Length: 278
Image (cartoon, rainbow, N blue to C red):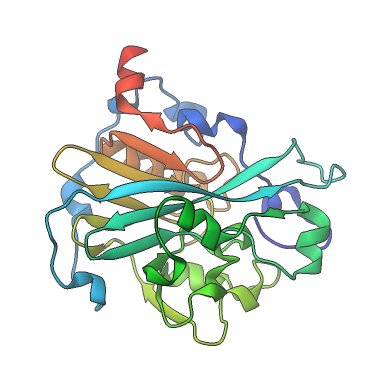
């Protein structure tokens, strides 16, 4: 979601409820069977990593991915795309080498956002505590993108590495894109990357532009499962051209995950459930 006093529909639309079915960006690639799509996974394998404390070894434990309910958004009904209330989720990865937080929800103190979206905030520290951790033990933040509903609480992590695609960081400095104070705050430790990257053992970032210029998704691998935090890569109001969106969706399909998680839908896509419905 981008900020604008009188927002254009394509800049501020919230997700369609159909996101839970992992929608495709066009009818040409709309298929029931998630596993129909194949991709060359090799070209998305990790490159040299970001220099970061998370890279110092791996205990062999299986990372868990936990959903955090961080905000409820109530769009002004006068907005042309308004379609009821929407939840905002972040995800916490319990990695053996440190906690990794994916997105931080909507921040506080922006009058335009408060007026147009009327967010109900759930304290991020409380949500992290509810799953058994402390906010001050988060070792890394990943922003899927820098729209205001994904980076709003970045300011709570001064000095903590915040990993974002370079193209997204550049876009965040365009007018009405986000609240820049939520991106470039005192103590911000922004790590800009280009493309795909392994940021910890078993955790990869995959460049998935489409919903935003520098959108990225997170892949968490274990011996038995592959979880994808899709964020908003599967979203039907893209800002990029259709072919860019298509490529990003095909990349995620080609990873053959067992579970796919979304930013604005509490229902995960599960391979086991999808196989039963074939």
